[in-house]
Amino acid sequence: MQEPKTPRTPTVPSPEHVDSLATVLDLVRSGTARTRPEISRHSGLGRTVVTQRVNQLTECGLMEEGALGPSSGGRAPRELRFRARAGVILAAELGATSIGVGVTDLSGTVLAEREEAADIALGPDPVLDRVEILFDELLTEIRAEHGDVAVWGIGIGLPGPVEFATGRPSAPPIMPGWDGYPVRDRLTARFGAPVWVDNEVNTMALGELRAGSAKGQRDILYVKIGTGIGAGLVSGGRLHRGSQGCAGDIGHAAVNDEATVVCRCGNTGCLEAYAGGAALARDGLAAAQEGRSEFLAGVLESTGTVTAADISRAAQSGDRTSVELLTRAGRLIGSLLATLVSFYNPALVIIGGGVAAAGDLLLAAVRESVYRRSLPLATRELRIARSTLSDRAGLVGAAFMVIDELFAPERLAHWVAAGSPAGAPELVDVPLRAPLL
Image (cartoon, helix red, strand yellow):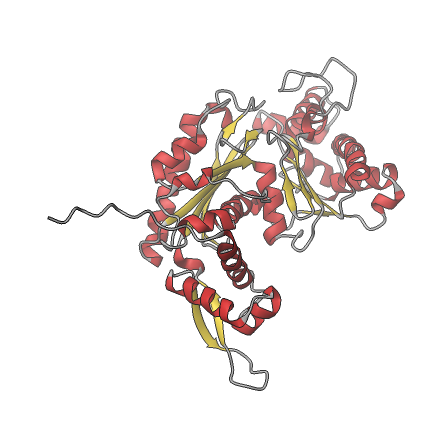
């Protein structure tokens, strides 16, 4: 009697094979090369290897042939296309006061999205319950239009420090109840897909780098000015997270020795406590109550509160007190950024977030401080610009975070034979030879 065969474990291709496979796929995904001769020219790979890799990627459903390309004298080559609709990515950006969720294809194009008010301080269970409901609704919508597409991965941006290796928040100042919460494990159990979690400012920086005003840049500083203040650093084309994932948390850098203003983190003198959206709202409320701003007093009387957006509207209407508040905030932020610009020497500083989108006054004050206080060499070619992706930066960046991780050669090796990483949450544990963005 013949003994039953032992099931075979899928063979993982050699590193050299996977590297060439990933190279070919990346060239087509990015649009850098559209034909086999172009792939060979950009990659340095021989014609035979290129043909073999293209055939493999086509067979597993990641690539397809399109129309004939332009001829360079001989037979016209067939153009190649990445199958961006082979799967979808679920992405969410959780802010202090809002939730943004979306579904993208594998090229980072947003197919459907929702945004609504939310309070991160309610805790992880009610907030993530809502995120999961919104994901389900969007998936139903997408599948009704595009068929039963599989979820290849999930990306989440949180408004606080995140230990990237575990996907857990770490003592986030404005997120009570979230410290150490297993965000990755929860979403993995719910959707059965690999999940990556990061600080929302890092995902915003990545969104701008991949699809916004920083596309093609290698050294940038993304600064979010919202309820809080944070920064994402890209150096040499790579996102710098730091040893534990909290690089760029500039909102809690000390800018004042006074002990009278206590930050939400428990310390005093933090930049966020003087120049963040919550600080502006606090100072605007005081100005309204003390009668120093007729405009803000009217807002307080009609709405019962004063927000950072109200201060922006007041400043645009010529309210002197609001102009002073925004200018002071911009100078404080600019003064700290001047130190970072001299230290880090980026080519581009991008200003984003709700407060940053409130007009030119704050941005002008930031620019003035940076150019005045930084080293001349550091600012000689420095550009300071507002985010072009605006509210979408974090959502788009969360999707690209997942896409980059999935298509890293080491992870590609583990799922390319199956044609999809759907249902393989263990991919997050595959070690990389070099850190990604």
